[in-house]
Amino acid sequence: MNVITLQPQEIKRFGVASYKWIILREAQEYVNVNSDNGERIRIDAGDTLEIGDFKELELSNPHATPIRVVYQITKRNLVTTPPAMVKFADSMAISEIRTPVTMRQETAQRFISRDHLVIAPNTKQRLFNASVTRLEAIIQNISEVEAEAMLGDANVSAVVGLPVLGDRTAPAGMTITGGGELWAYNNSNTPLKIALMEVHR
Image (cartoon, rainbow, N blue to C red; front, side, top):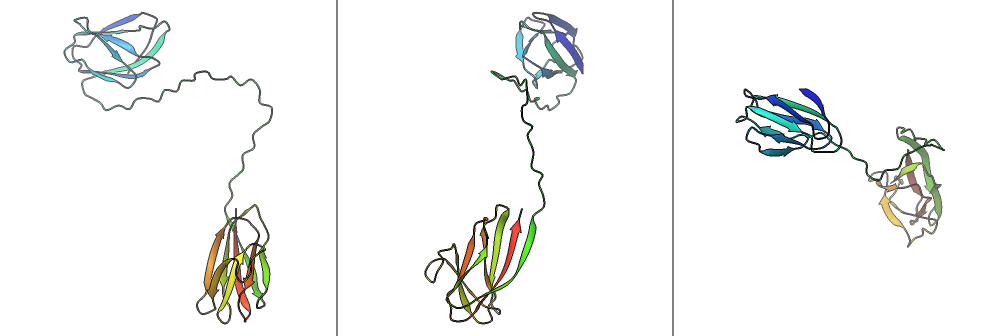
C-alpha cells in the first residue's frame, strides 16, 4: 500500500501499465483520478477503479486542505469494505468534568428461598415486602388438600386477585415480575400452604 499526503490542488502522477485496479483504502475526502486521455473520475474511500487501459495515472486533490490518502494498485480485483468515517459537526468541546460518572457493576442474580407459609382459611397474609432489587417472585400452592390462593396487593380478597388452585399432588404456581409488595388470600375452607422464592439482581 502507498501512503501520500496531497496538498491543495497537488497532482501525483505514476505509471500503472502492468496493473488493473486502484483501490482507495483511506481518505478524509474524495480525490480525483485523471486518466491518460484527460478523463477525470471522482473516487472516495473504499472505492475500487478499473485502470487496465491506463498507462499513467494522476491522483489530484481538488480541495483547499491537505488530504492523507492510502491507496493500493493491484493486478487483482479485491473485495473491500469502506472504512467508517465519523465527522463531528456542530460539536461541543468538553473543557471540564465536574462530577465523575460511577458505573454500576453487574452482579449475578441471586435466589432467596423462604420458609413455607401457611394461611388460615378466609384470611390474607403478606408474602413479600416491596423491594427495589427483586426481579421476580415465584409462588407455588402446595397445600395438603386442594386450596385456592388469590394473589395481589393489600386489597386482595375472595373476589380480588389472581387465583392459583392447587395442592401437594398437583401444585400450581405463578411467577410475578417486579418488586412490589405482594399478598395472598386463602379462598378455601382448608389451610393454604405456599412455597416462596425470590430472584434478586
